[in-house]
Image (cartoon, rainbow, N blue to C red; front, side, top):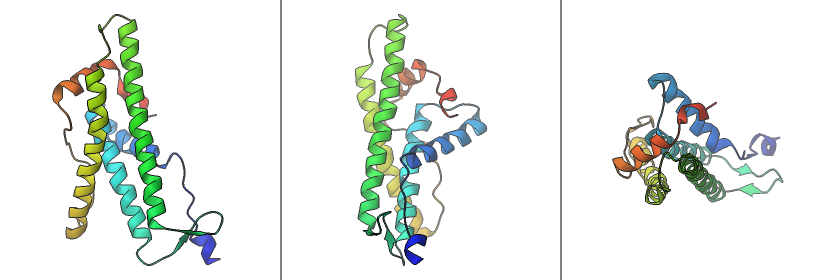
Length: 170
């Protein structure tokens, strides 16, 4: 019975569900969100899920569905994969939006530099929120969304003009 109670089943949507929940809160508060919010939500999602994993392994042993022991390292590897897939997905969405703007003649060329900078921003956000998580853990403060800017403002200007992100939460 203990093994069943301590079995962890990873959902392929856990990361994106958490990110979507954060963006929904932002939209309810501000009326909309932009790429800065998406990047911050991804960083915060990573840190929150990482925190859950660490808390899970403080005093207990957990198991995979097949009954074999699950380690903290296994779960962090899973989280890293989820984060990489989310960053790739967000970059792909931005690229598709840009291609649509090129086809419609609203922009002349694909903003390649901004796309690469967007990907870098996700990893910078992950690092910043993990640093915040470690600091907040030491002083016992909750981990909350920050308004960090990763990359340059021009990148966000370009990306925000490409598409309306507000409709993507639901």
